[in-house]
Image (cartoon, rainbow, N blue to C red; front, side, top):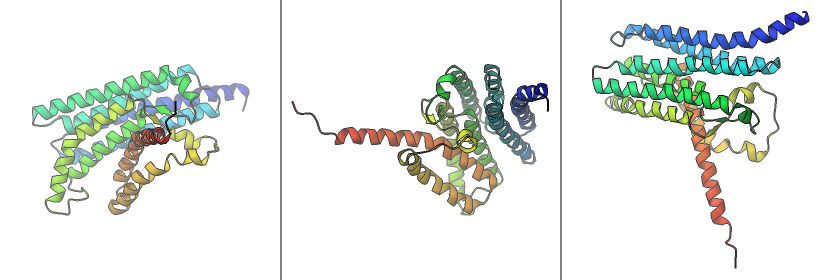
Length: 291
């Protein structure tokens, strides 16, 4: 391979992967638009839309990896990546919320979901704009952490809500085998969904730290101390045990994917709360200075 071919590959490959993110997001939007809430047979369009969103997440992970491996990261690529993320992980999840939950016979519920979807889209765009401004500082941060929930993880949580609604539509909710209990829990979950989606939106613009999954998994190995490794252990056990139990009990790939994204989203606030409580207890244990 000649030097010019290598240079062309270095400039085209990451950009092509980034644009693949946007194209997959557009395909997800087109598929979601074919859903009719009055016709259960059109639910497969929602599943196809979620599948395209997962594909967009894969492209989003690979473009950054390719740019680092080829040493061709640039401000242009970072700006393009944020624009594509705004489409795939901002517009598409918000549209999914509106299509699945917003078109109700009750106009009040429709207005509530319209506000929730708008809030999610606005928080996604604010999160991406803030990330671009703080990118140089975050790249130098120890542990390669994000400030605020990353937009792909937030989109995965929204997909989890949508997939759970699909299970309830077809009577495949885990507790539906118990008369009365499954129906009551389904009604409760439907009422909690707007708060859950709003919570995810707020997490994106919060100052809570979240790890960089692709750099931890695909990046170079980093030596970790026992103290650093122990930070993830308590919250991982608390949130990971129900996920493993539910995965074995239900056996549905949609539920496993949804719980995985929600585990990542809830682990950040739980860790922040744990660190705050540990810091408070440390101050309480320190003896006061005598005059």
